[in-house]
Length: 177
View 1 (cartoon, rainbow, N blue to C red):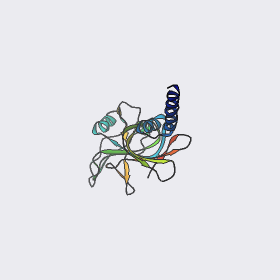
View 2: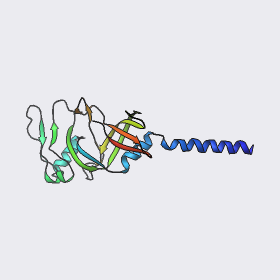
View 3: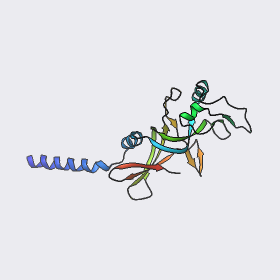
View 4: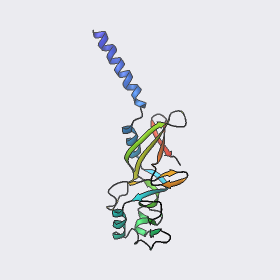
């Protein structure tokens, strides 16, 4: 009986040690949220409330009159200090939410993980997810969702995809564009 218990304990410990390289949603979320990430020219979506709050807090100006269906909120210095990198696109045909480009190092927040599959190389994974940029300002209590790409164009209807590599442990490599 004692040998069976010992054998069972060894088996459980062996299975647990194999699980160290398991890739699951919880581990994915922890990796993404652990360290701020450098983003260059990613597009993030804004709600109407966030746009209005930005106007009130002088992060950007009020929306311009539409020109061919597109209107902008001109970026002001306070908005640029938060690492917004261009005017806010308030309305544009084909987009259902306002959006803006960001550039800099940001903490990320996972909103939801949609799909995980094997990546293009050995020990890689591709994760489709809703992930957002955390901005330290009262106007942005929730992560601003990062837009995905479809046929080389930013799209509010597609989620971003992140590449992860196993190299002594799972690590986030980059956004796939």
